[in-house]
Length: 361
Image (cartoon, rainbow, N blue to C red; front, side):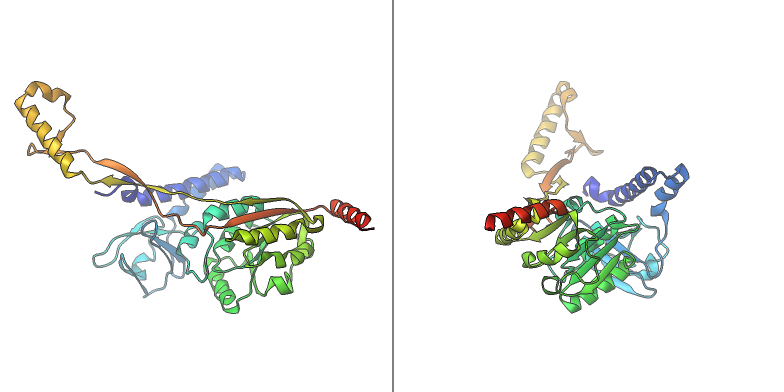
């Protein structure tokens, strides 16, 4: 017996995408016709060369580039791309022989994060969602990221900054940076993401306008070394956020933030996401025996059958109603700490430096 959410997984995923598109069109001032066009997004067909997501379960999600004649093999079976090309997003796709079905979905940052190849430890959306709020990422803004890694955070930044925004992301490992560029091209994000190879702790944020960055995110082993370079490009009043797995890193970074009054409102956050699932609970032998005894008692005393809650099938055997069990699912998150600080306005910083000079004299 499959739980309800598993049997109807494609339906609610497609419906969620459509409702989100309708709300977006209406919020942005679109007409009713534009909202209808947005709600029809899930009806588009997958084409040759498209990057798609095959969704099998909470932990089994695969990103695939469709190519004529290619085959994708996984635990669910062998899926011929020729059978996927031309299918509508949100539909079930099945292997030619045996196996189980998968859901053919459009890629989005959440699905990309769960399906990408891990070249490094990645950050999941428990922290990414808070990060986007802290940096106030929105269309038209300029954000810098140091520590591209596998590109999990970069894809979410790109969606938040579109249209008109830019993400400058830096990776010190040259091969990882090259692979990240290939991924961004596959996702169709090169119009928003500018990926560069470099060590921001030593070389700073190259090719970034001075004072023209609206937010900076540092996912580095020693983020305090990059803060002096961030001072040059971060706009006054803008924020910088760091992600660190160790509290010792947070302590050193916070000390650097507070030095000379360059930053204020220094705070730390830890986000823990708990996901819950629902499944059918198999009836225990003892409960089946109790049900049989209750049915036998009802047959001996027909007057008591009116209050019985035991269901019976066509043969007269007791049929216990399924019970549902909620259980805690695996937490998909790279546990760490987010440290946020706000760049002091120019006049306040000058006043702080003036006070420091008077004290020293």
